[in-house]
Amino acid sequence: MSSGSNELLVGGMIVSAKILEVKDLKKHFPVKRNLFGKTIESVKAVDGIDFYIKPGEVLGLVGESGCGKSTTGRTILRLLEPTGGKVLFEGRDITKYKKKQLRSVYRDMQLIFQDPFASLNPRKKAGSAIEEVLYVHKMKDTAERKDRALELFEMVGLRQDDMDKYPHEFSGGQRQRIVIARALAVNPKLIVCDEPVSALDVSIQAQIINLLSDLKNRLGLSYLFISHDLRVVKYMSDRVAVMYLGKIAEIAAGEELFKNPIHPYSKALLSSIAGIRPGQKRKKIVLEGEVPSPVNPPSGCRFRTRCRYAVKQCSEVEPQLKCLGGEHFVRCHLC
Ligand code: SF4
Image 1 (cartoon, protein in one colour):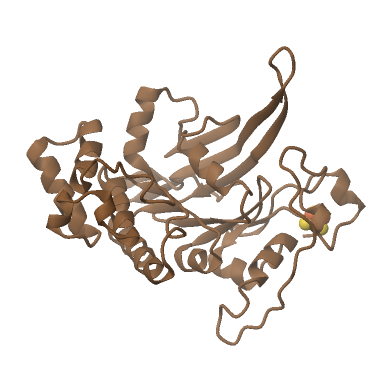
Image 2: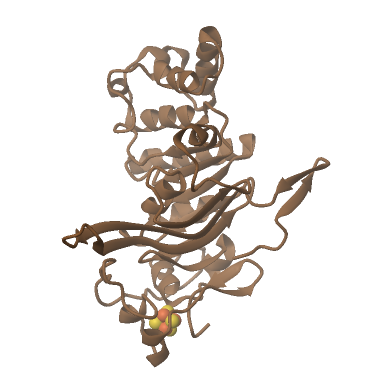
């Protein structure tokens, strides 16, 4: 998938037009081996996906639970080893980086998990959690690390005396603020936000979403924003990728996709938020059948077992991601 030129001229400097580029990325989990230890069956959680993120851009990643969204985020960050494909960060292929080289990448790329409580050490004070990140990355001396932690606390809306509290002394929303501050500590350029508000009360979700949006604008961050909540994705994203059974079904500018989804799966998925625009009427499309097993996905188009438009070709030939013009790509024979 290409968006044209790979370079931009910013302030007299040539920079990559894509901060992140994912090419034919695969992550398979072996589930069965033969007598000789060779994998004979695997869960194809991510099975050849391509997309890019531009500097300062938010790419939303949506799809039903189990479609491979979170695995994609973790594989990009090399928390899971890719089975195949490439991840390019600012043009550098980080797929084969050794542990030491990855440390420099983690200064530029960070992750915000779904569950803030699980991602914080219960025995560590909130301020120390941030200072520790700076220490690991060999950034600043002791006094400077404290100052930086305080600066970050203020940036995410926490108070100075919160630095000496333990995670259990905070509310869920406050804990997610600590996690965000910790992610920002090393001045990253890209953050993978994996369902960052789904573990929070509805009343708190909007505050965290607004904080992420504000930080993105203030600091010029890029996000890969993974969520099953379409309203949140619509609010946050510049472009949106729809994922189905380990593949990208459609990817387009958020406004365009929500207004005019083309892929039958995107149409069904987005129909569930009919009325998101004032006066808009969209009939809810109920998908029939179960999501097929990622161990043995259907031949041809993976969506064919649930697609009302499927024709013979759909079971025989796998559709490729086609460009419909601009940055709108769809994987369907009938488009
Ligand atoms: Fe449906 Fe065929 Fe298009 Fe797949 S390729 S979405 S089965 S029409």
